[in-house]
Length: 114
Length: 155
Ligand SMILES: [Zn+2]
Image (tube, rainbow over all chains, first blue to last red):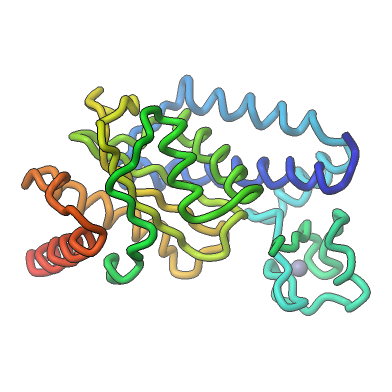
């Protein structure tokens, strides 16, 4: 553990999980049954255990960004951060294997593997 | 928004051999993504099911989630040869599955609109006992088209 690519993988899972929890109310409105007692509890446990799997500095940084933005991770597309739609400095574009944050908005950046 | 226009023939499998909940989810995800992306979506879908089964009753389930693994709304449809246990609301086995995956950033909230629409269409499918009627993906898409038109007229 410790390779940035593995940490990013866990951060992505965490991010998907957070979106799931955020969409819960919308799901209820549409008519899906949500199990708050067992279901939500198990997701929160899973969330806590994912956070423990990554080094504290990354976990803290994710939590800090999440307090500021609903979406803590943003995709890089054509050299732009899709969180704030600002162009990224060219020297950053070769760092797709590292965990870096957008110098403008601070979101964690991710490059789609294609 | 026209749902039928979001469907594609090669993402409709009306002869799925999956026999378990996990299997059917995995098989559906592999219809739209491969390897690492599929793993991320699959794990998120399983977690969504922990929050409550997406089996809405009468043989239909609508597994759905948002995932970083996709950059646009993706839909896959599957029908299993044998109905399977999906812990549906009515405890009945499920044979028809609508898989919906959306990116976290989703202009116009297409995800929720699509979900709502599929729930509505599903009600019509079960009300008129149509789950097993279409025999080919093309027939399936035209049936959805027909139902959509009918729903639009009622408004
Ligand atoms: Zn940014």
